[in-house]
Image 1 (tube, rainbow over the protein chains, first blue to last red):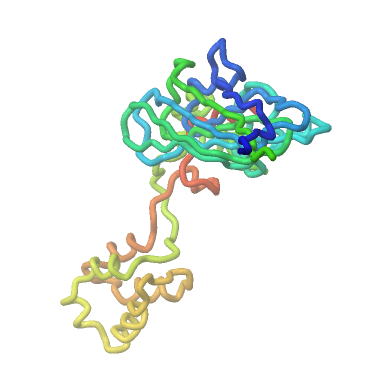
Image 2: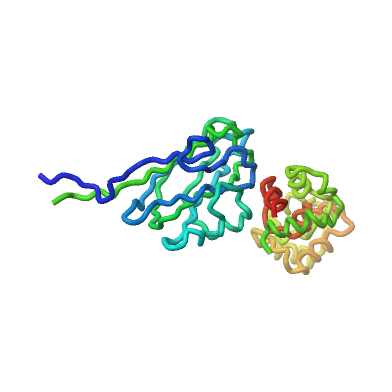
Length: 168
Length: 135
């Protein structure tokens, strides 16, 4: 009987936040309402590489957010041969987003919604397809409150998913 | 010019002398979002909102021509105020009566500094000011 086989076998999960031990730096802690943050650009490696990604984001607000307002998450890519040609020209470092208009050239992947107007933990997840090599995460805090100031209270996890095939 | 760049110009030039230079980012956002006592003409008003203003005993004594115009205007679910003639007619019909001032007030809306400056966003946020000041 044939066995399943992964065409891309290197599945792994990256922890992306502002903690010292994070796999990728993205210091979202303390981002005020209306501001955004760009992550360090990730080099996903030469092809073949994963192109399906799962994400999960957990966060706390520092003060009471506005119910049903979003923490928006985007990705910015760059082509294989030029890591500096970044969508929205958002930069490759862990830094503040310069202008909300830059988001217009990014791909929206999802949001964490303030399901309640209190400072309890909020979590959301999703999946996206990205076939490029260089990937940055970008957020816009529209929660109506500052993100909690403790770096470990914001955790974004990105899992590279393998293509599953059937061996012959 | 982007919205954030427009904000930077406003903060730097402080055309209404609000004292932005001495304010924290959040204070500037709150100042821009606060109603400033100015008004502008509304572009529409829901029929129900307008009807609630009316004193029907006053409507009854209007002339037939005035009631006819009023009926025509109130045939819209949402009264389009963009033609100046509609606004003028409503003000004229109720001029001098007990609800004259209420009608005039209802056809205008209070605005904030942000709207006065023509910023194309519903609410200025602290982070927007942070971005503008970082330029």
